[in-house]
Image 1: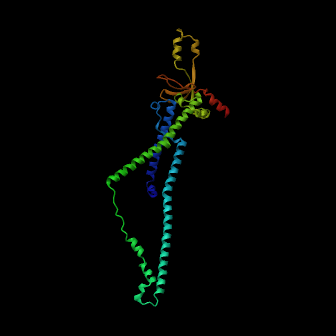
Image 2 (image 1 turned 90 degrees about the horizontal axis):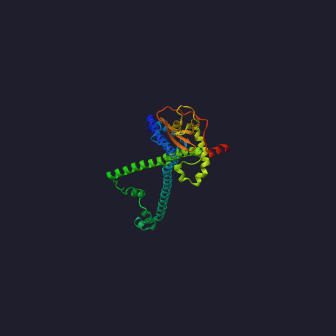
Image 3 (image 1 turned 180 degrees about the horizontal axis):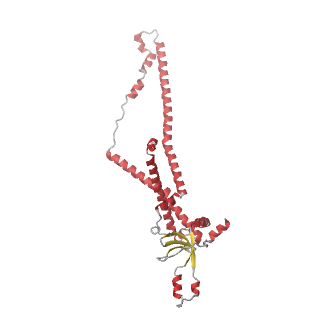
Length: 329
């Protein structure tokens, strides 16, 4: 096998890279889907780039660490079921050979002892009367030397029967289906599901760090253990928020209301000076539509066809849990 791989090293490397890229894409897609479900971002609207998805999958160290552990355990199991039985059979075979050798020597010793006793007993006895001597008869009952090997080799072997073609097709189909199903389940259990869970946890932690509670779609599933873990999630979510830009935007509908209240002459108005605004984290965007996260929850906001700008804000909203985490740190 090693010689074959050495002769086709380039093909083997290309196959490994292709399989690794495919698995990384599947893992990254599961991670992003889990994140999008919690963040409330439509996955069809915010479609990640192919290479960005692969990079997201490669960066999930916990998932690949679990996969590596599973592969090592599987190889150890295969080594155990292949090598240990051969070693045990070899040990048993050596024991059996020693026993056969000992039995052979014991049988040879019996023959020698019986032959000596028969030789001593027939001294001075005429040849016609020697067959009646008990020692001679016992020695003759052992038969010719090598008779046991002759009898063992003369035993006919069982005739070999070939399986039918239908049986071979059934076994081949069952083996392929079982292998495909097992591979799919292993990928689902050890790669895709953990990646999806990691994406959902990252989104929940960022949400808790800003709002102080879990997303509204998961409030019914909140348990005492989750409530206890919220401060820790807020601390981890605060670190996750460091990769997002914060922006201060006018609240929806404020500009329209101010336009309706603006004086005809275009003079200044007190309402025009007091515009309500909020600060958000920009989680994701496509074209002119963005997923924003603020202290009141997540918002999907579109800026239409007009020009817009998202200047960075010095205000970075955090919940009380995240603020307390920063004070403890």
